[in-house]
Each structure stands twice: as C-alpha cells, then as structure tokens.
Length: 310
Ligand code: CP
Image (cartoon, rainbow, N blue to C red; front, side, top):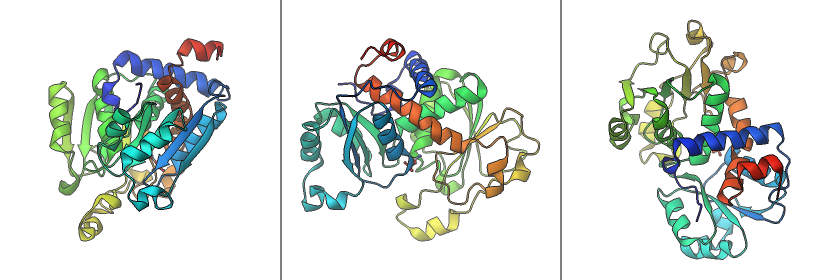
C-alpha cells in the first residue's frame, strides 16, 4: 500500500511534487477531496502539532476523524497487540496516522495494515510528515532546497526530526553542520548515510555566533527528556544551547530559524519577534503539508487537487 513510513523512500521528484501539492493547499485549504473518508489518529505518545494539524487537515478535506490520544484508555492497556489494534482500526478507517514510542512500529503497522499508515513519529527514529513541512518551509523561505548551509543544533541523538530531514536533503546538495554536546551527537548511522550519499557535514560542540555566520537554516531542537534512561544525564545537558537575539546580529539576511517545537528553553523568547524566526509559520505549514500527505497516500493526484475532481 501507499504508507508513509520514512521520507528516505521519496525520490527528489516526489518531494518536489509534494511541495507543489502543499502549495495548492496553502492557496485553498478547504477542499472536500476526502468527504467519504475516515482518518484514524492513533497517538501512543503525546503530541500537539502533529495530531492537531493532521486532524485539521482531515477536517478541511471533509473527512471524519476517529482516534485516541492516550493509549491507557484503549485495549492496548489490557494487553492487545499492536497488530490486532491496527487490524481493527483498518476495518473502520481509510488511513491510519500513528505515533508510537517504539522505533520501527510504523513500518510494522504499514506491513500489517490493509490501509495506508502515516508515521507520525516512531521513537527516536523518523518523523516524515514533519520533514515534509520542514522542506516546504525551507523551500518557501529560501526559494530553493538546493545548495544550502543547514545547521542542526541540540539533541541530534534522539531528535527524529533531524534524522528524517538529513535523509530527505540528500537530493539537494546540502552542507550540514551538526552542533551537539558529546552525549547527544548525531548517531554514527546517519553520518554513515551522509558519507554514502556524498553529503558534506561538519561537527561542533560550540554553539557560537562565529560558527553559525554562514547559515541559511538554523534548525534548533529540544533535548528529548522522554528518551533518557538516566535523568541525571538529562539534567546535565538540558540547557546546553540557548539561542538569543544577540547571536543573530551578524547572520545572513536569508537565515531562517526553524524548530519542530515544542520548545523548552533552547530559543529565548526575545527571538520570537526577530524576522529570522520562522518556527510558528513552520508549524502552520504543517497543515498544508499534511493535507498533501493524506491525499497522496490515498492516491489523489496534484491534478485531482487542482481540478478538485473528487
Ligand atoms: N513537531 C512535533 O512533532 O510536535 P508535536 O510533538 O507537538 O506533535
């Protein structure tokens, strides 16, 4: 089926096609293309943006939404397996959007479900719908995805959004700069991926004005408290980098600051009014990117959307 499990499966052409779809939805988000569909949102982990923007996307497309936000109120708390849950929900809904704490859960669900599954985040692994909205945000603010200097800052070990973004950008000749403390460095498997695909990268532990002087995109991330087994270690690294307005004074005019959100304290509040801050618009772009994803996994094409032929 047409599940979206990892963005790595998308070609360059497919990514650019999805951006064209998102543009259509930004021009007009209200199109009843899914008027006869039911979308299930199964969230085994907390979420604000991903769930609400998928549900808004479904509503604006005329679909109805079922789902849960707390697995404790479902039969998984009585011991029902993920497979049985997915099989049951597949018999009620046309698409399953699922966030799960286990890496690989979305791939497994996609394999057993007869309906498309959209990975809304699986542990520290991947977050492909976030990547689609990140790519759309980068494209809108830079006018291109090609040849950009992208700084990934913070928790690069557990941050699934940076893992997905790195994989998607392989088509666009980026230079990545990884800024993380030793404990939260980009995992070796993603550095290997960079080498395999010829993606340039540098690594830093210092987060200074000098280091980010040539940045086009500064992608801040939260330290992922929920992934730490040792909370003392979290306490040691939680405030390691804080972006303040002063650090942005000599940065490029085209620089835009992204963050998947939620933020804890890695971006000072005074940055919010800086014209280079783009994280709230980025989250809004999630609506358009997710309308595109819901349509695409059901086989609705860009032409269908332009012509509203459904
Ligand atoms: N960016 C993101 O995944 O946010 P939520 O956890 O609020 O869905």
